[in-house]
Image (cartoon, rainbow, N blue to C red; front, side):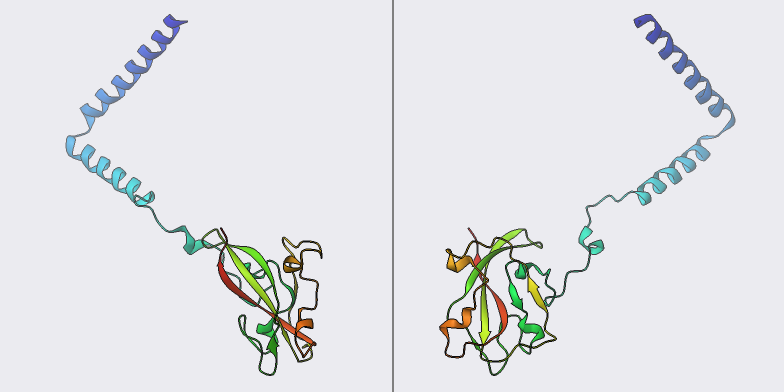
Length: 174
């Protein structure tokens, strides 16, 4: 077997040497250098040399009033941003619940976990055109009250009517 490999390499060497000697007889050094330069420049232009930011081609981020937005991972209710308020403040005429539930959501931009407090806004009737989200990721049974989102959290307020829910980042999860 080693003899076969040696013969194979010898025949490859002879063929390459013959091609190179033939090219040397018919072509000048300047044309070779010109063609080699064009080939190198073409290869350099075709391949990126420096690292580049791939986020430019990434999908566009979700709008904050979409149920798939990362801060809404444990939200169960109407978004206040579609009910006359914003993501972090209750609409005029309503008040934030005295108690709330907490979820841990992962921000896809930095892959870090954040504690998100969900507060119900109370005291006004619900808006029929509001976006309703039911994303109960990590929800626990009812005996873990702070992690259970199927409760009317307006029960602690004097105005017990549920209107919408805000989501506020309160810190990083550790």
